[in-house]
Length: 579
Image 1: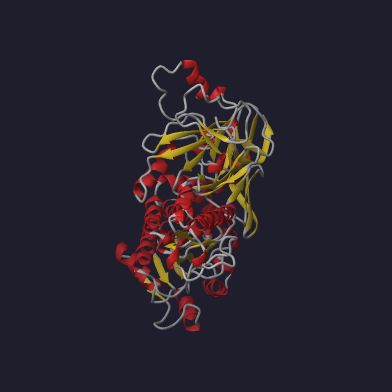
Image 2: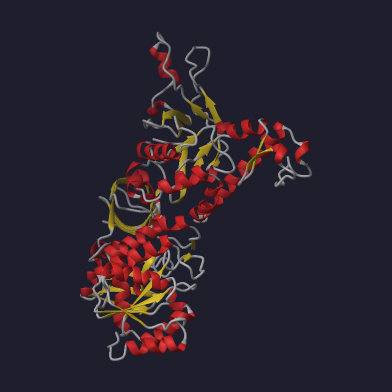
């Protein structure tokens, strides 16, 4: 059980935490100055750690006691977790990390420069060690790599590598590590560099600068995690060295990342690199659309380009498209990097929250990924007709890719050289839909709610609408059970998902959390969790229930973390009641 470290916030695989000492320190941070290493000092000459001393973190002996060491000495120098009343750390092997109730674990045996070894080491550590303990990586952090290290899941670092490199004449910045003699000017305004020139600095000066730069970068890392934009930053920063690119690419697509990435957030997501296609949010969205979503009609689908404005329907171009279509076809937006966004999911994260560079040119990876998602979507939803209202270049390549994979017959409505919003294109779109019956506004609202329910809770969840009605105006809609007017949920504009009531959670099949015998007020803390579904992700709507209370809220941890943590908020409670 950890007592002096708590995770306070998360952004995917990275965390904000706090070492709760006399002088608290927010992590990710340099904490080497807070460690008192007992190393292999088993002799009686050194006193045991002081009980109740919270000024430092004691690294308990991590080497075998010398032969003949009295058992009472061993117990005194390395007390069991139940007997410790001070912040403690343990040194663990990257090959076989063993949990032992410490606040901090120092990971050794990580091979420097080996990105695969580093990724596998941190995954093993996070799977094995207590999730609410800090993971310390010694003698590795630099201003150039610490953002990537924090993204992998490390919380704590020392300044050793930066100092040793500086004393050897290496000057470090967020992007560079160069010998002092190669600099013609100093790209920094820290106290060491301000009003100085390279030839005025020696190794000691470089060491002090390196530590300043490392501290500044860690402050930047914490701020990015705090505002939910850390992955955006890492995609740029990782290019400072080859092994960082390798590490992020090796981590992407793993269960380790998917379990930790939230299902929804309010912040915008920048997708500026090829690695953006591999983000867990992107892959999750594409998977849910192609495995859970059911089109509200199967006669005609119109494939449309995306827009800079989000949600798409609020953009001028999509206003023109909707005026031409008039609910006579199912609207499906084709976009990089998400793949396919059915109109009913345009408000769901990340469809309403991403921004991407627009050049009109799609690279081979984009065409293959988006075209593959579109093909999977078309196989699942067998439309009688498919109308492609997209430009020939870029979007056309994607549609052709999907058509080749599915043998779909595509009708094109944008003449060669024209834009989809040109009058000639819109006239062709109207003509293609002549004679097709349009849906009602009520049917469109129900389609939005059904789509969101299936996407959020699983295929078939939207069947709850068979005995329910929808009221309100888009995008804020209420789902009400028809038989007794019981409120089941509300479609919220911020996340584009359903905030459910207890009855709604039960009917829609929300993930569940079993709690102990208490009535939550404001939040369910991890120590109060008895069990939790494996599939719970940060941001999920969950129902919690125990001997004395039942309620609903939003998950603040993934399911495994809820079960294994001894500190922190597991669920933010929206409603709870006594049983």
